[in-house]
Every structure is written in structure tokens, then in C-alpha cells.
Length: 116
Image 1 (cartoon, rainbow, N blue to C red):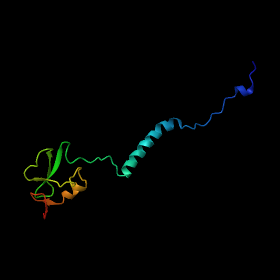
Image 2: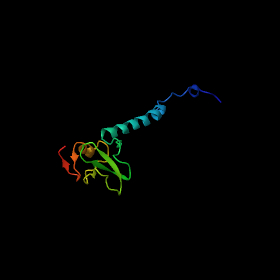
Image 3: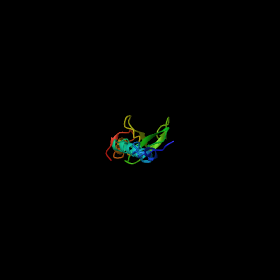
Image 4: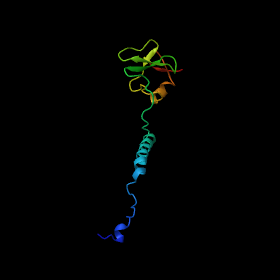
């Protein structure tokens, strides 16, 4: 068997088109960073706020001041000195729209907003 010059040459290396190790390490990181950025920029920040009350409880407003509040077990009436929030205006998360609103007003024993 005769060996020719063409058979003894090494093949030229071809550039990788799949990205190789770089793509295996970097693309998942870029995907995770992009997903995180998308959530933060669209306002879907994972709802990381704390709930006003834990499961099985509902929030109540203290009578006579702006900052008082508590949580009562579902099925029970509010404690003396507290009233329920009006339907549709119940704060669910700390610093949500209704939590901020109710922290600026005073209510009477009937739950009506009064001059503080």
C-alpha cells in the first residue's frame, strides 16, 4: 500500500458553529438574566410583598387612628375597637393601594371615614 502526501496531511480544523463550551455555560445564564429583567421591567416582580394577614384570617381597621390594624380568624367578628374594611377596599398586601389609603384615614365605630 502506497501512502500519498494527501493522505498524510492533517485535516484543517473547522470553526465550531454550535458555540461549544461557551454556549453551554453562558446561554442558560443569559436566559435567566433576561427572564428576571422581563419580570422586573413589566411590574411582575413576583409579588414579593408580604400579605397583610396569613391564610385563614382577614384584616380589620382600628377605630380612631390611622395606623392601627389587626387580623381576625375567618368566621369571627372583629375585636372591640376594630371594624371590617368595606367590600372591595380590603388591603391584601403590605403597601398595596388599599393599605396605603387606609393608613391615611381615621374611621369611627361604624367604619365611616371621619376627620382625624
